Length: 257
Image 1: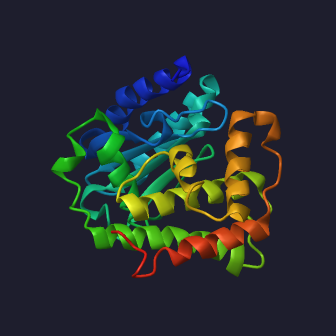
Image 2: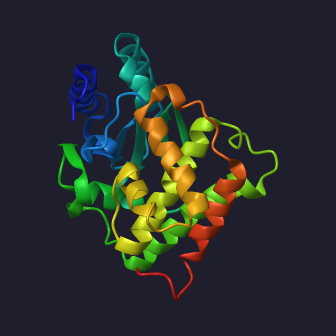
């Protein structure tokens, strides 16, 4: 897997500058996702990163971080491909806890969903860029906590693609592809009890779904290999069928975790 030099430069810059910007408030910086799962594709992948702090960012820290990210983006286009969650150490798995999110080139304050899936991802294949090993402070994630998080992810997709008639995401091609891959990974994690890259989960899911759903998985994988085909729209009715199929795997007689 070839990682662009500017991606490496960005990771080095985060490791160098965040301790200065956040000072003693910084606990650690943790890389996860496609970049650590041998699934990184420079044409489409984000850089997934978690920053853990002792407390919520002060207004001064927030402003300094926002200014540094804006300046860094001028010389490194990969900054806007950074997806960075800033979480409070004692509230990592707490729903509606304060946190900050940087994505699409903007940083904002928001409420966290306490997602344990990212921490399983960090544990299984993540890289510590700065600070202590996450095992030293991340709470134990039980099977039930993991199960509930997977179901919550499925319900997010159901809400956006089935239940909300005015969803802004329904007609966005990349979101439809994201939904298909996420459904594949939800099914894989429910079956295997762990988190892998979305392409790997998709290759596994091809053997688990009916023919009518296999086609949309293959379409997404083909579009990943050929960027010129990424504009092809995946059938929304098929995705809705896939959501309902995946939901059936949560039935007591089907679940493994």
